[in-house]
Length: 506
Image (tube, rainbow, N blue to C red; front, side, top):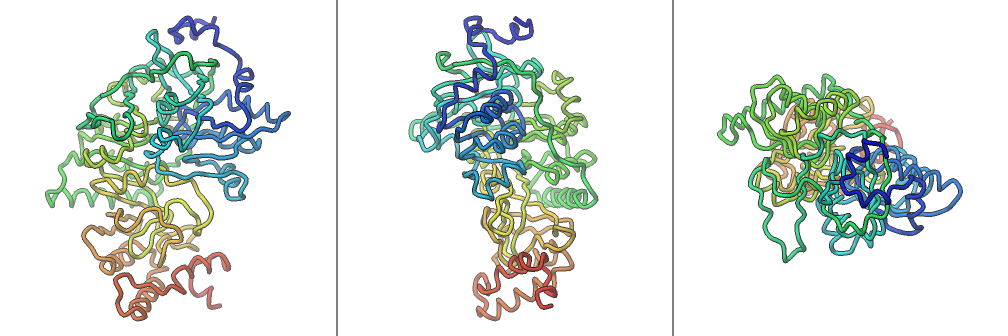
């Protein structure tokens, strides 16, 4: 046996479980529910899904796939394109998967990421026939050590009938010890989660399973697919600066200190850029309590700005993968990975007082946010954890550029075409144009701030025209709308490829 494998496989009685990826893939039965490890292209099953792709070339079969969040191309691209996936949940981010969902070739269950574990406990998701779980090691006392994400793996492992482990020896051994696996009990019987600050460790370093469930172990050396975030541009940097000034005003008002409160930022280039903005700012001794630790978090640790960072996964660009995983010992005592039902738990978000920064696709003049559906019908990625955080955070902040498609689309519209986050959950909106602090404001009070501070200049007059006519038509109703026109901007976009009014009248 490869000495690297021997070192990672602490339970020698499991040696006879080591099989090829093809043998493991042959265990997956048509029509079953399969759980897979992975969260935002990190710690996901890779070699067994690719063996399923090969199997699909000669055999027709379908499975339902549930994960922590989005996976790399092995599942959300190749396995989807092979026609193997019948249903997918609770989050994805691949163009191939997205296209098949929007062509009704794959059923998609979009859900708050903190809720999935409860659905498994209740049997709504399941029965789970197999869990395919990437691990960095199996300890002598039988703990499965996940790689660089935890996600839903602990709850899947508890309820799955069988477990297939991908033992990935390409991941650094230094991952052993950074996990904090705490799994709540059944609702109505569970204790309060014993965490009062994000730096506490309340669980074990690995996932404890019934060893009889381990059906197969496959050796892997496949790296995670790198994050797809792009460097900040001038406008995202403007948004970061606007938000930093907002935090300064909160400190001046006595609502925050220079250490702020624990920070959460969503996945993606804009949110990462906003965090990057802290590198040269005066804030210090920061704590991150998020879903995903992206490039910016490790840059801030290096800059001495972040003292501790907890999440459920680590998702990095290729450059940062080399830097971080090649020297993980440097970061090991400053980071922690937890199950997503803990990282995203509403009670803990409220208790710890998080500042939550997530991305919107579009928002309306009253503060409702659409983060999932293009023109109300086509799924982009999913709601992810943004709802978990926005509703329960001390500050629920949404960021977006004020326009899209070169200026043809306004990100601020009269009425959003799909509502993911109602006006009640949206505290602050930031675009490259400015900021709207909506706290404590009635709907009509929000309109001026959103249009004047956040909308692109090309669309301000058009937005005011709609609002003023809606106010008149409804006699100043609590939330003025002209129902016949509320979605006319999206209709114009579909017909004329722009939301600009002059095209509609041409």
